[in-house]
Amino acid sequence: METDDKRLTIREWAIDDRPREKMLRKGVQSLTDAELLAILIASGNNNETAVELSRRILHECQNNLNELAKLTINDLCKRFNGIGPAKAITIMAAMELGKRRKLAETLERKKITASKDLFELFEPILADLPHEEFWVAFLNHANKVIDLKRLTQGGTTQTVVDLPMLLKMAIEKSAQIIVVAHNHPSGQNRPSHEDEVITQKIKAGCEAIGIRLLDHIILAHDKYYSFIDDGNM
Image 1 (cartoon, rainbow, N blue to C red):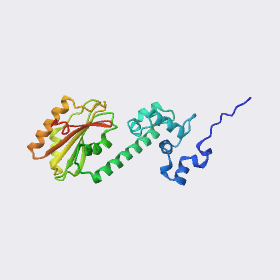
Image 2 (tube, one colour):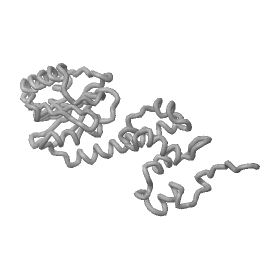
Image 3 (tube, rainbow, N blue to C red):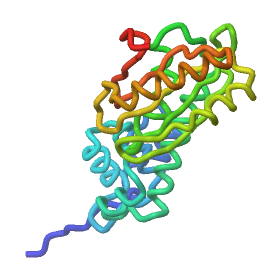
Image 4 (cartoon, one colour):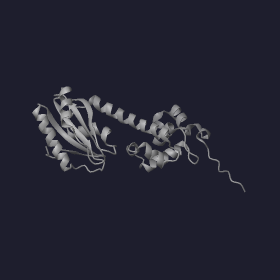
């Protein structure tokens, strides 16, 4: 007795079940995350359709797009059959566009009044990174953000801060106030001794040129630490 193990390709699915056709007929909001991801990768592998592969990718990321954004091109290619460099680059580009859109929306309306505002400002930039980065926000006298810049990029546990460069940038941008932020990829949101030392150095440097250091925050995934909230400045 023969059995028919032939799998349906996406083109053989009902029209309403095909991601592209479903988007055209019902709108992009009708698609699941897996269906949107399937549109990006276009095809699956010998055993999975693009949608099935996308579901598996998301499942291994706890169905969390932030976890997906943490994967590197190498991670995607090694862990998922059917994902090569081109598809991995497409996925990463889409994640980066989403991050930049979120950041742009935040900058349009951002006035800093509390540490929560700072978390919302830096979270799109720092939350998903597997390495440490140190950023600075330049503010005017009304606590409105003028600009954001990455100062340094380090390894998985520590990054080195170039204080003269930070102060030079603040002067060039005519900033009245600055905020500094960095991330802890480990998920530990308490400051290290080195974090405390550099905070005091930055504060002293700012005071020497008439600029106010408003806060230093540490992001650790979905948590953060504020030096000013903790009375540590």
